[in-house]
Amino acid sequence: MTTHTGRDTASANSAQSAIWNGAVGRHWAEHHTRYDAMLAGVNDALFQAAAITDCDRVLDIGCGTGATTREAARRTPNGHAVGVDISAPLLARARSATDAEGVRNVSYELGDAQTHAFPKAGYDVAVSRGGVMFFADHRAAFTNVARALRPGGRLAFICPQTPGPDSHEARVMTLFQSLLDEETEGTDLTRGTATTGTTDGTNAPGAPRAPRSDASNARGAMTSLAEPVAIRRALAGFSSVRTAAVRIAAHWGKDPAAAVEFVLSRTPDRAVPGATRDRLARAFEPYASPSGIRVPASVWLVTAVRPH
Image (cartoon, rainbow, N blue to C red; front, side, top):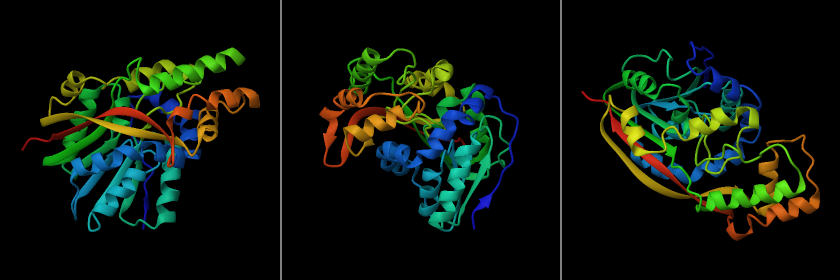
């Protein structure tokens, strides 16, 4: 049976807590299937690197709505997976989805993984699909995660590379914004977009970004681990640190119109005429495929080991 643990500890990331417990977190919770579809391209690489085996105790950092926590649990049927996240709306969705799917060896905890009181050496593996980039102090956060791992325990996570100006993601979003600006002025719907980033993710390749009031926080966090030198500095307490570039095709929707609707859903009170939506859809047309809109993106796959 799913354990609905609700405890929280002091947060060192108050700005991120406000974002992910506010409108941004509620949007992710409401559209969790869309975000999970967008992020799914990294799952194979992440779990292959994590090498979860039966009886492992798994910690999912920044678990969001729990898709990766549930996948980890399925890979360790005689073990257990714990998802921790700073967002109450996302965890509420994670718990309901876990109950609906009947995954029993899962629990969730509300907390900031930078300061959360994890059991010492309580886990064999820690994973994260983007959530680790939102820490205020990465060295402190990964020191806390290392303490939670047993000696020899494994860490595997995904974080974004900085999308270059000529990347597919930058091209489509620049075109999208320019078309929108011709129609109306004000909210920047794409500010803060980066490959992979929420708490789950919160951190999707090309995910619609936070509103302008949250933009500086979101933008800075999403690029905080975008360079290998920053990753290695953050993981100074780990050994065997490796970074590998992974190319994916982020799924934005079943067709151009659905992709546009997804982006515009971030500002639901904004009226965008049908003619403008048709023009916006053209930005996604080059990426249409039989499996939907697929925009190429690049992320880092990072692995490390807690020293004995």
